[in-house]
Image 1: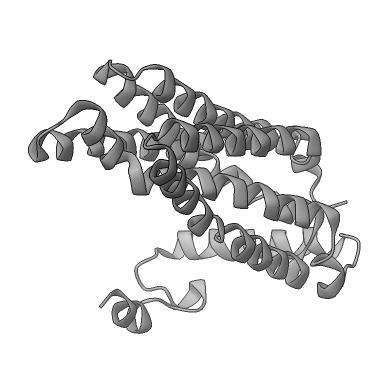
Image 2: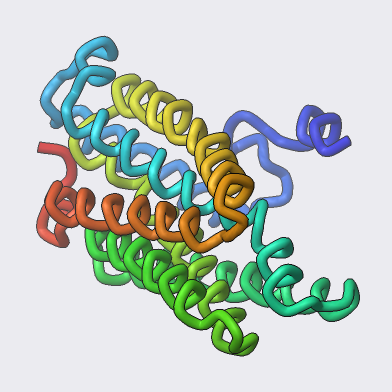
Length: 245
């Protein structure tokens, strides 16, 4: 249904958007021209080269690891809470709403802060580290419902808050078609984690009868993603301000 709405309501160009004021259309067009001019000064990289670029491949691995952690928790959080605390359906329903609410607030804050400070690296790596810390709190807090839910809330915030800063990273060192193609590759490879996380968590639980081992695996994935982004060094404030090299 939404696809049909988008087909008829979403325009291709800012001048066609009747829901925007003249000032808003002019601002968007100016921003597009500014980005085009910035991309023109970037080192020319073919699409085939961009898809083999070491930084692109590392970002794809990072996204795979984060999606592995995110989907693993999203699929199994209700089961974990129900198993550990024998919650009734009504109570479980209210509790599983809390983590996504904090994730929404975190994503909005990180997007605002990253744009305000012109910094991407820490705004990507720190939320990922929070995701790992939240899952670690979940593991050690078994038996204490409030702390377990708090751990899931922190983890969810980390799973989602990094996104605005993360998806700006390819545009720092690539432009136009190369940037678009690299983003597609990162997204495609990363979303395979949507299978890996739930599979590992479910498999470990079925073999051991416990969720802790699978949660430890997710903590490792989130930690590795945060460390990789931090060591990659991409997205420092001066680098973002100057545009592509």
